[in-house]
Image (cartoon, rainbow, N blue to C red; front, side, top):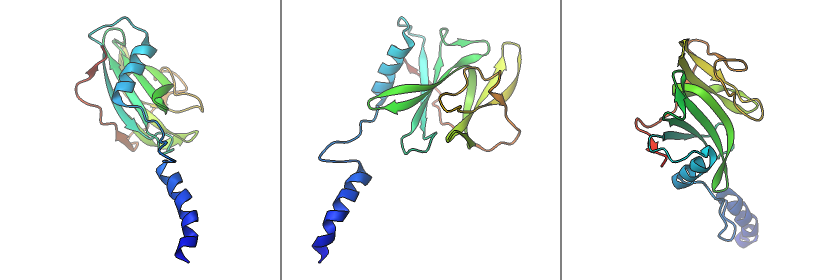
Length: 173
């Protein structure tokens, strides 16, 4: 009698584990991230370019997105540096956000837009009085500039999780 139910349990176990006859979903590695960034940024090798990254499931699909903060003269100015939000795409990435003039800390808010968590970034410098801006997903991307709409100034005491970015970035080249 017990054996009759195994044919039901085995397919469910395969769906849960994502393993079907040895086939597993490809997940990008740190090496894949570095390779993607080198290709995407299309910059001549500059040894001063560094990146910091953290993963967080922004759309709660059980596949964490990667938030990348780039530093170096090609990516930073007096107003901040470049932040990318990347979605896993097999062993590579798809850009779902490219936001300029960002300063850490970068926070993930409980609030959401189009099922994606809102992101908080620090804005300041370049003549701008410092504040935290809210970046809301519009169904396709996050805002390009945190100082103009649709980005907006964050309310005080808004709850959010600070991304654990490393203190020192990884050389891109």
